Image (cartoon, rainbow, N blue to C red; front, side):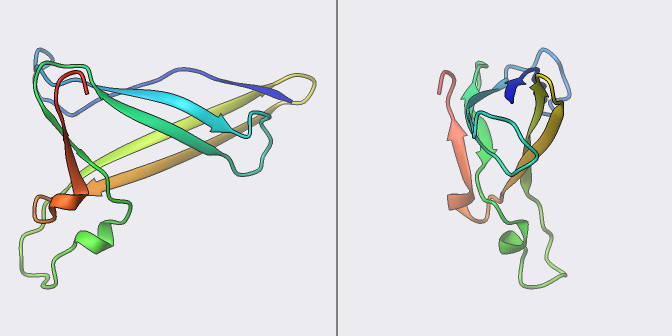
Amino acid sequence: MHGCVGGSFVADGAPNPRDQRALGVALDRVTPTDITLDAFEADFRLLNTGLAPIDAPVWPHLSDLQPSSELRPFSYLSLALEVRLSGTGPQQASGIGWVELYGSAERGDTIITLKPGE
């Protein structure tokens, strides 16, 4: 069965649509290329398409970033990337996959700063 991947939606939560921050997401690869109901892998690329730097979270587990005490304030960034697959041909199939990444200012290795054009 052959498949197709289409459509995208990106929002950075900026309160003003004229904000100079803009995050683009490219889907570089999906494997396997034949779509079934089995697991698949997707490679994403984040692109700063705006005019101002953007902080992007890169850590896979939110629980690793939580403070040791529940009394301490806890703030974090999150970014969810989703792929929806649709199979075309004599048999129809569809699938969905996603990853959510997290980052905390208290752990510098969990956030990267993308400059414009990166």
